[in-house]
Amino acid sequence: MKKLFISTVLATALMGATSAHSADYVIDTKGAHAFVNFKIKHLGYSWLHGRFNTFDGDFNYDANNPNMAQITVNIDTKSIDSNHAERDKHLRGNDFLNVDKYPTASFKSTSIKFDNSGNEANVTGEFTLHGVTRTITFEIDKIGEGKDPWGGYRVGFEGETSLKLADYGIDYNLGPASTHVDIGLYIEGIRK
Image (tube, rainbow, N blue to C red; front, side, top):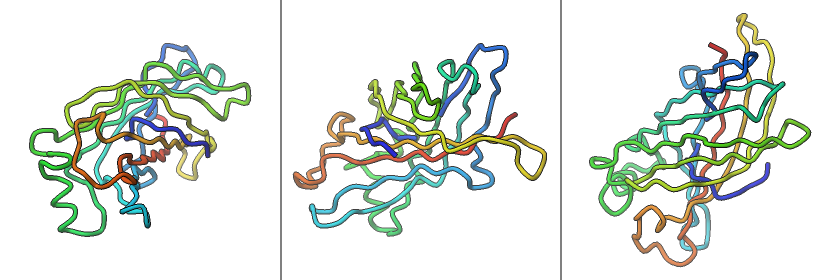
């Protein structure tokens, strides 16, 4: 999978196109077939991994006209989980996410451009985190699509990007190796 600094989170969705053959999908968070993960260097010696446990989103996608796809993702910032309660409390506080003031991070695409294979695309959109909205572009890969065993239809994508924390007003000094956070969005959508 190719990397670019995303919004992120984030990262991590595609929604609302006008193609006659396009289909609307809901991101399968109920079945836990979607993830918004992050990692950041710890002092430059190792990676700290985590995720956001609560998020939702929708996207619109048609394999015959993929550039009309759109995605929207909403992330509950209070759901940050780095597998350490005290650290998560600090991350939710004023030094980082300030979740009482900014309970949601979001991404809404403005442009999606697939390559000729139809399996890789550059996604551009508005990412809001910590009360700051910036335009970001990141790469996604199509994992696959088709019928599921329950009579539905699914399609999956993944993408990864890196965000400069200071761009979103998060300036807590974690050292020069930890100025950026990598966000990964891994989604499986169920056709509505």
